[in-house]
Length: 178
Image (tube, rainbow, N blue to C red):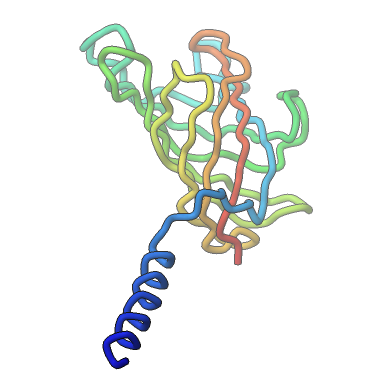
């Protein structure tokens, strides 16, 4: 009888430990979800007033994909596709091209919110695989309304006008909200 009881307890505990370790197949629902549009106007010779970004290094010539180019930006974020709309945030940071054989950039920036709807920041970083239609970057923290938030930002290029202007749709999903 002791061995039966021991076996029963052992099986129950084993089943509990195994079921606690199994990853959940269902995705958690975000605690906050919103879409913003990122507008980037690269500085040229004649557009000082409109430029929202500038290259601070030139590509060193290692390939045809801007490898090594570093861009600093302070871009308006709107809730619609219209560049003239009132910005709800600013994207402030940098990206650099980090692949010699294809277009790829690595972003690190802060969304700075100072509107009636939100106050605070979201910190975002990760690889932007530009040739992929939809790509995810990580939300690694925040302040204010977004205190210690974590989640993902899904990029989709909405408009691309060469090196002069591009617009990215950013679907922001936060999974940790405090």
